[in-house]
Length: 271
Image (cartoon, rainbow, N blue to C red; front, side, top):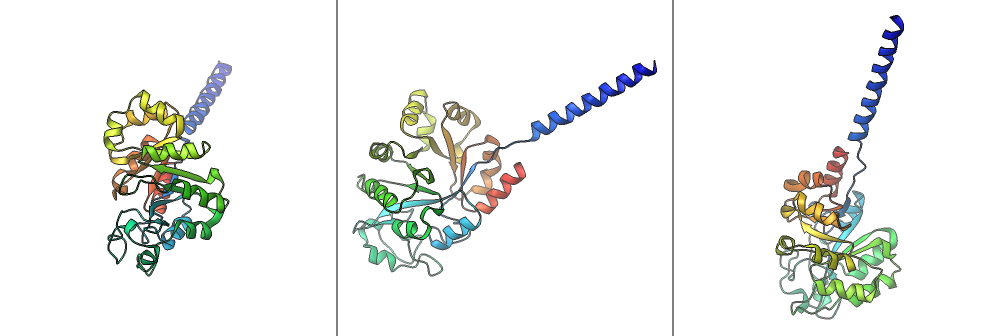
């Protein structure tokens, strides 16, 4: 009888140990999305300035994101909007201003608007770049070859660069210029709403993933895309704190953040 009781106690201890191990395994997640500094740490410093990029790197962001525009004299500058009105003390369309005029503007805290070449000179191959190309105001492709030439000139390894665009033509042009590039197709709301298997296959043929606004992401959409072995990189429209918790639950592959320290803290807590 005493032996039976001892045996029973040993079994119970073993089961308890297994249960504990299983619970720990269930709670142990190695999920960590790419942290992409949106226009640098743009919630902390003026967007697309060296202050903003430096702060993003201080916060250990995985990538610094750079939006490109082309000036009237053909220089690539870091600027999201088609005009300089919102982010500088000047006015006018970027593509109608010379580089000299753009460089004379204050982009915040005495910073100037950096060119793509200046960014590459400053950081070289020490950082990872997430660069957005776009068509000009006439819908023409004007920057793809120039950008790739700059990346080659400054010996930036391809594995340290992701290129994205809402323009399908730009993504196709980049892929044609160099099939080994890592590309992300940005999708608008209507693109996501009608997304089907044919669309996903066409994207997968040339890109590694898609970029989608966090506010329209749903779990079914995430599953649909990731099931096709495509990555999902979620971006915000100034509403990062509203959507971050939900987006982390979806376990998307990358997240754009205006404040990489905030996002890193959320990711750490989830882990």
